[in-house]
Structure formats: structure tokens, C-alpha cells
Amino acid sequence: MTSQAAPGQACPAHQGRTPLHGPGFAADPAATYRALREHGPVAPVELAPGVPANLVVGYAAALDVLRNPSAFPRDPRRWQAKMPPDCPVLPMMMYRPNCLFSDGAAHARLRAVVTDSLARVDPNALRAQVEQTADLLISRFARKGEADLLGEYAQLLPLMMYNHLYGCPPQLGDRLVSAMRSVFDMVDPERANGELTQCMLELVALKRQRPGQDMPSWMMAHPARLTDEELIHQLVLLMGAGTEPEQNLIANGIRLLLADDRFAGDLSGGSLPVEEALDEVLWTDPPMANYSASYPVEDTDFAGVRLPAAEPLVISFAAANNDPVLAGQQRSGNRAHLAWSAGVHSCPAQQQARLIASVAMEKILDALPDMRLAVPADQLVWRPGPFHRALTALPVRFTPVVVPVQPDESPGETRWNVQPTPSSSTSPVATSTPSPQPSPHGGRQRWWSSLARLLRGR
Image 1: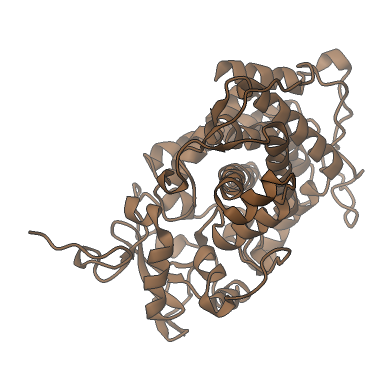
Image 2: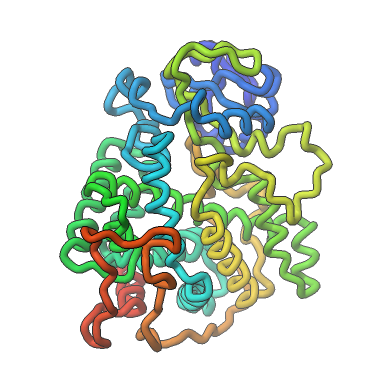
């Protein structure tokens, strides 16, 4: 009889490293993190079969790494050169010329393109767009009395918002998110990465021909003058951060509200503690559980561990947030968690991400006030993978209702551009492409018409 390691324990097949892959880890990652803490703030893990790494599980140690990019740089190319091309984690960790995988002046230049472009998104217009999109989605299943809130709501809403923010045709947006999902799940990663790159190439070519009031066009017009390769990989980064993690934040937040008595009691009393639930999820079950790899330049002693040069040092946001040294801290309203990372690489879109998630949760709770889980919470199934904390489905039941929605046609042009130049601190240069004026009413494809076609196609 073959012996097996206890849950969360390493086994000989993994050479003393605890695996962060497979259904066992997905079902109960907290048990794995507890076992890893026995090693100290840094522990040996396996990200995929044959892919060793060290995982930072201590809160203070995580901050030390995140705030010291000179000692812990992000460029993975020395590690990547040793990996086979079909390595399942490679699409998530391989070098791309974007701000996530760069440091110093290169990082500052690339990040400015992202932050300046995000600054042009009007939060009030964004909120209104999320509300309208949520109503449209809810109306499609509200009469049935049951739904999978992951596949029918939490997954589609970020997709639609990014189709809009990217000025992306619905069919291309669907392909983009399908490829991104396969990258996260490590399903045929080479093919998924190729499809993701191809979709971005098509989007960039489209925006070169017809720039508009959207993120790709603004990034093209930025004084940093991105190359097409840089632009593609900046867009990949934003899409990856804004779709998969966002859908998980929405779904995990709804699950918490429905399954945890601390919140469910308030819901039945008419209160909607959405912000408190978001804080709780970002602390206890962040949608990106383990990521932000860095690669020591040389063999380095850190937190009592010898870190090999160019071997991934991965931050466990989930484990660090739940470090026992933080026990007893008030979480509601406490934004000291690491769900958005920290330091110079902290998420530049966290305000937009939180707004989208909170509005999405508020809208579903308002529309379906007696909503409840269709299965016990402990029977929900989590997707495998070392990086994310993601459900496979979120089945719910509720009293059937009719949710009114606006017509397919938007009542007016949405003005996303709230600044005349890429940012208040930079001026356009002669080679910049100015943001064009909106086309006449009949001259551009309408957002709500695109959404309707996407939904009918699904």
C-alpha cells in the first residue's frame, strides 16, 4: 500500500516541498498554510509538478519583500530560461514587457501609462455602467428562481466592463477571457497563451485603425510612446488583473454574505454589509492567493532561509493576511491587508476593482433579497491552481422576480475621459495621438447593442 501525506503536508514525490496544486490544496488551502508556517515565514513549495519555489507566508516578511524591489527584483528571465516551454505556470510567470515584470525606471515608465489611463475613467460613469450591466444580467435569470451566480453573473460582469473599457468587440472579448481563464487554470497553457497574444494583437490593430475613448487608445496616445509589444503586454496585465480576480472577488463576497452567519443575519434584517464583507474576503480569502514572484539576484539569506538565486520567491497574500501575529485585529474598514499587494507594485486599479465588486454585490442583493445557497457552503467546489481562490460554480435559489432593465440602446454617450491630457502632470507630446472626439450617434457601435449580442451568443 502506498503511503500518503496528510492534508497540507509534503510527500516524498515532491522532494520535501508542499504542493500548491491539485484538488486537495484547492479544497482547503488554509490547512496547507498552517503546515507551511511550521517552517517559519518562508517555506519550500511546489507550484506545479517539478517547479520549486519558496512561499512567503508571514505578514512582516511579505512586506519586507514587496517594499524592497532592489533586493527582490521581478524580472523572471533567468528562471524562465531553465523552464520547459510547456511548464504550466509559465504563462502566469513568464517575462512580459509590462510594469509587473520590471523594476526601476522601466517600471516607473510603464506604470505611468496604466495609472494615467485609469485616471481618465470617471468613477461616477463607471458606477452607472456597472449598475446597468448588473441589471441586464440579473434580468436574464431572475424569473427562473435559481442561477449559477458565477457563470451567469460574476464571470460575465467583469468581461462586459472590460469589453467596454477596452472598446472591444464582444466576440473578441469572449475569446480574450476564455484564454485568460485557461492561463489561470493551467489548462493547455501554451495554446492559451498563444490565443491570448493573438487576441491582443487583433485588438491593438483595431485600435490603430480606429482609436476611441477607451484604455488601449489612451495608452497608445501616452507620452511614454509604448511599442506595440509593450502595449499588448500592458493590456494582458490589466485584463488578467481585472477579469479573473474580479469575478472571484464578487463570487467569494456573495458566498460569504450568504454562508456566514455574521453577515446573513444582517441581510435578513434589511442591512447590506457589502463593504464589511469585501474587507473580510480581501483579508481571509483574497482572489489572488499566491503571486507577485520575485527572483533574488544571488543566493540570499532571508528570514532564516537560504534563497537560491533566480528561483521564484512567491508572496502568499492569503497566508500573510492570516498570519497568527495579526489575530484579533479589526478587519472591517482595515485596508492593511495585502490583497492588492504593497510597495511600488501595488495594484494600480484597486479603487476601480473595489467599486465594481461592491456595486455588483449590492445590485444582486437588492434584486434578490431572499437569495440563498442551493447547496451547503462546504459542498461548493474550488478550482485547482496555485495562484487564485476561485469557485467552479455558485448555485443559488430565490423567489422569482421581474427585474426592469433599460433598452439595449444606451440613452447617451458615456464620457469616460475626464482629463484633457494623459494626466494632470503630463502634457501631450507632438508624436502623441490625441484622443478623438466621439463619433456621431449613428457612426459607432453602441455599447448596449454589443452586450445584447454577446449575451445572445452565449
